[in-house]
Image (cartoon, rainbow, N blue to C red; front, side, top):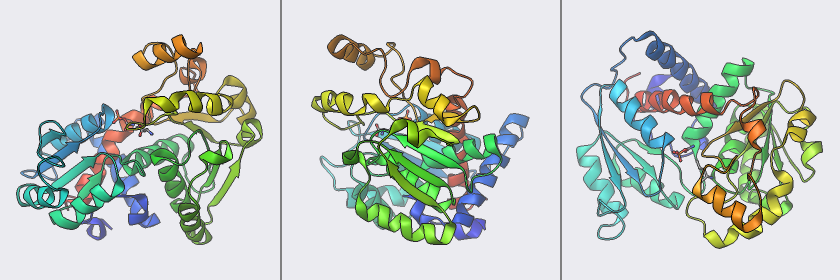
Length: 332
Ligand code: CP
Ligand code: NVA
């Protein structure tokens, strides 16, 4: 299986077959065990990777840097202020320069076409660390977390609350489809994903047995769910002016104890993070002052509850990103 991923990019989960995703999850499990046991796994020793971040990051950047070091690689971090890309040099030229020096490139930024261009012109594997449209390394970590908790993926029911038209909603729909899961969007209709993406997933679902559906009632949607998932209401790169509209539209879709109760005692809570679950952030405090709310997409008591897998999920970013790099660089 490893040979089918060698030399390939990882831009969306559409790029991988179900068997390849299963392989990456098994490899991540193995790498996680090795890390915990203190066993060396420098499968990519001597290689070099470039990490381009046009948006901010805690988990993704740290996961790539730690995973690279564990695999025996060196990494170079480039942000939009300290590199020429975009402003003084085209993406196509940057891709050709970096591809001549590095064995792999990670990109986090804006339009998905940018990461596609890097992959088309660099000649080395390119990994999508988040674009406006997709966040596939996050969803691989989510799948590992669900598998660890429930023992399997096929048939599991994940309900996504919030803006389901952006990177997290889109990528979870693709991931759940590929893994034969039940994916429910729960949001006002204007936040449903695009028809084209839904059609593409529905086609794959015929083969994998996945179910995709759309609901507007937050309590009905929760019934029987294994995973209740949410994300921030305004994503990086979106204008501050839309907070008011999002708060108005999405407060009824905030994950509360009542929604968790409707899902049942075995349901878990997941979130890609970062999360506005209290007043310990600048934005959280500013929204509290303006709109009088203490939290946004999830209440603190659910975030901090036993049902919350958010920190296991965050740790799994590193193990899954390591698996993606090892497999595509040919180390495993
Ligand atoms: N979940 C995630 O991508 O986190 P960062 O923005 O901190 O990388
Ligand atoms: N939708 C969020 C995900 C952060 C990991 C964003 O793009 O900001």
